[in-house]
Amino acid sequence: MSKVKYYYDSETLSYRKIEKKKGRKLKIFALSLLGIFLSGFLLLLVYINLPSVQTPKELSLQRELNNMQLQFELLNKKIEQAQAVLAEVEDRDNNLYRVYFESNPIPEEQRKAGFGGINRYKDLEGFDNSKLIINTTRNLDILTKQIVVQSKSLDEIAKLAEEKEKLLEAIPAIQPVKNEDLTRMASGYGYRTDPFTKARKFHYGMDFTAPRGTPVYATGDGKVTRADNTATGYGNHVVIDHGYGYESLYGHLYKYNVRAGQKVKRGDIIGFVGSTGRSEAPHCHYEVFKDGERINPINFYYGSLTAEEFADILRKAQEENQSLD
Image (cartoon, rainbow, N blue to C red):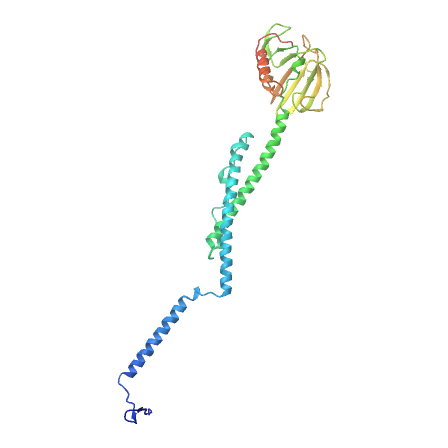
């Protein structure tokens, strides 16, 4: 049974019974329901926005994450700059170094091979910044591969340069007799009149006339394979194997200054002008061989003659006169 409540009426100076108004309970219920609804709505807003409310530790981790993202972006820029520099080196490698040393350029597919097919970055997927991390890792891998390929290429270029230097030192590139020691350039490569038979025959070398005893020089680095007089017609002669298919022969010498098996350098004195063997006067008969075939020695004097001197000796070598052997 509910309690009866009274209130004091000051006008009548008496207590009066409080009468319950109709609909009061309904209002109280409605207000309660509204309060519950508003409380639920506020709780929902708090729940929705809860991720944006971070603890100090979360704020610290977020700052570290942002800093790491910035570092990755800076690293990507540095990788792009390194790739641009490397691209210039690759371009010089293909279009300058390899062209000079007569080596085939390295194709672009070979420089960047090995990055297609399987997904090698699967373990890096599923993170907030996976795309950035994967992109950086891929660029770094490509750059590393390009550097390895370019490093091997430069090692090859260095080896080719060393071989090229040895080749340039070995090729017969000077006259066997100095210009100041020459009486004249008597006969060149080609058809000439034989001094003994007077018949027209092919002369396979060049004749440099000079006084007996004039020094004869090795025209390139190499190894002496012959220093004797057993070959028909050449008299005392020296043969030098320069390597790379090149040989040179120096005939009709007065005497030798080397022996078979001896290594010589370009400009070393290997003998002295004479007139031994099938010879009409003191001179040095000089021949050049490439892969066993006699070739015109006139093409190998770039190491000791000026342009004017070469033009003069070329003119004399082309005159069809009488040889001295």
